Amino acid sequence: QLQLQESGPGLVKSSETLSLTCSVSGGSIPSSYYFGWIRQPPGKGLEWIANIYYTGSTYYNPSLRSRVTISLDTSKNQFSLEVSSVTASDTALYYCASGISGWLWNWGRGALVTVSS
Amino acid sequence: ETVLTQSPATLSLSPGERATLSCRASQSIKNYLAWYQQKPGQAPRLLIYDAFNRATGIPARFSGSGSGTDFTLTISSLEPEDFAVYYCQQRDNWLWTFGQGTKVEIK
Image 1 (cartoon, rainbow over the protein chains, first blue to last red):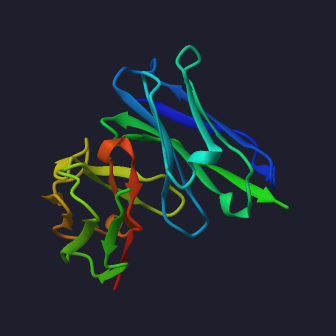
Image 2 (image 1 turned 90 degrees about the vertical axis):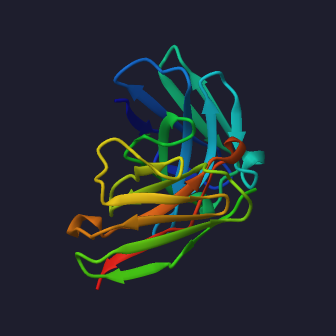
């Protein structure tokens, strides 16, 4: 059973870039796994941001695609997210998650990111 | 982009009652649908994948059905720990989307 842990700054200034890393423990990054980022604004629902296959293929939410980059580093057992030009609407709890066939069996606890003006 | 619409937004029921949650897709997604449960202060937990397969450790009172555009999550007899928010998720062409959630609350 993989364990996931998000890390990164909890406060980001408006117009700057938000960077988060998800560390994977409990084994090496498995083949056939997808790794993704999902966010949840306070009191609201889940929004998929991006995902990456273990081969490196990437998929992005069309509404965020122009500002988002997801990457995978199998040597470090981690994957990362960057969101550029952030605004207050990017304030949310950011989850990393993983699983086979696009189903999210494993989740991190979430990292709260607040965008300040 | 496939949009998922969940109904109702809120379901008020008593322990022991049957809960029926709906998720409708804007286009056919075959059986590429999952259901998650989220409790306050916790990350979501996978309940059902591929529309009807229970994830490891999920009680038999949870069941999923449907294909194409219409899907249902049924909780046969609500336990106190089942009161939570439930989300559906699709993975058509690896572009994921989530429904807006259904809150199952104690009546």
